Image (tube, rainbow over all chains, first blue to last red; front, side, top):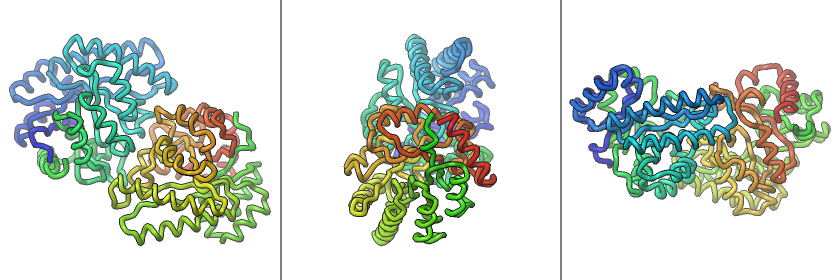
Length: 270
Length: 270
């Protein structure tokens, strides 16, 4: 089993909580790390957010998220890049291990063109991140999100994109929900090595209740989580393991109940 | 545009129709080919089905479907293989271009084990098919079906599996709904050449109304259908193009309305 010291609570799992509430929840449940979302930082203010995190002595495993590079007009693309610059600054200020990048859908351009915009966007953002000591994590999203969230759909594609950059600046976020089905998962993980900047867990329920809001708690689905985690570890990853569950029902449960189950399932299934 | 002579109506699109009604619909709308489902053949009886098809002079582009190889017990796997033998016989008797194989989910075994059962199953079925002059079409299904329908999820995986067999016996069914998102789609299609045994079209609506029953009519979504079709053609495919749309709303429309739209959209978008 993965050591509890590696558990990180991705706060979107209990989206109704503010950053302060989420951090306090982690302290109550002995969870040493948190994955923070930008809308929560904006809600609290950046300086207050930094204080909340520092006062709690909690580790920030990630800031979610930048990306969304493709758009039809140059003005819109520039606006998005500016927002990505702000995300990098926030990630650096919060001392997050990584800024998670969801690269975005084609958004009105051809698929091939969108992928090219993503390459250009990551190139520009990587320079900005390097100068500020921040790291970028490319998260391939399940292919069912290719039309509306990410034209980056496989680990192989993400690895190729990351390989064009320094291994200290651009890496991958491996989320088991997005990659478990991939016939090349294990060899690709083994190859990913020091490019793995983050590791996310949840489960795939059968039948799937909803594309976006139907992820399951670890143990409630079919993903061979421990196998995948062990392969990532063997490849050299030893960082935090974030539990990130988009699920309407779980989101409506009392947050402390969610965290208690999360700790239990992490110890059983990860 | 693809010539109308290549249009095939996959009858699941209007599932309420019997085989006879589906064939008569094709005749009324000048559709020269049909993709037939086994439950419709069973409903009419095999001999009657053969007569319906022969009398109409319609081409049978496919029989749907065999597969579902993986299961925990040897008895259950043998039962499934026997059913696959019957499917091969029916495909041969109906002179279908190809028996479509949906290889099935892991179904209680580990993912790697299921894939191995699929390899073994295809091996055994290929010998049976070859002896009867039937062809098998491996259909990679969208990764969102990996847990409940198919552990064969990518064109690359299907090509590798097919390559272990004679090119006259085992090939691929390329369904744009399942493969459009794949970053390696175009190079893989170019490589597939004479292994392309069938080509299916529909569309991916945004947002997706439903995983299984939410496919769109060509032109209603984001799939770059013509690009994909032209690449398959350039690779050497010149056979029928089946319209296969699992969609609750379309299934409830009057069948003739569906066929009229299908002919129109085929000429505009394929």
